[in-house]
Length: 188
Image (cartoon, rainbow, N blue to C red; front, side, top):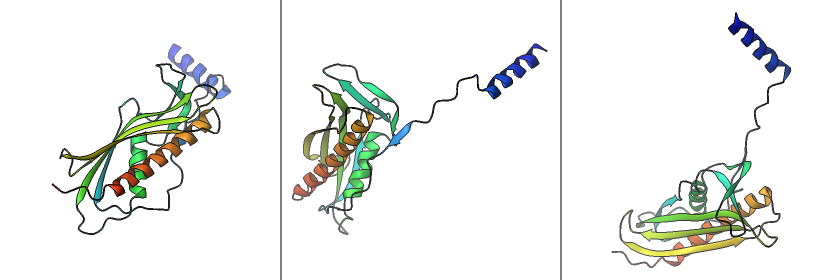
């Protein structure tokens, strides 16, 4: 009897709207439109991107000043982990390879990807390391660090995700240009 009475009350409360409504789904963000310009490089490129698990969890991160604590925007997420978004953008920017071209392994490690609030500004900051190898685990042919700061139009989540998306887009262009410039890396 008590169980029936309890279930009846629960149904009544649910129907009356007394219980809290579930939170709206998080806003999903990506890098925007696919760039039309594609760049040819002298190899077939096997693209691999990665990031620490905490950075690649889909949250939109920000930092205030010199704090050591990262915070996240509630109700805002990336549509995919940032490393996956970067890999997709790199592949979108690469022109189809020349048939029979040698294969090269491109690894890009995303080290920082956050909005940074300081001195009244809130730019996006991205840091990555790129590696070219003849194959995964093979000899290192070239490497380079990339650091970008992209101003945000506003010091809020919208300004942050827009600047972060632009920063990843710029990073992909810089990595592709770097690959193109290293077309004469000798084969082993």
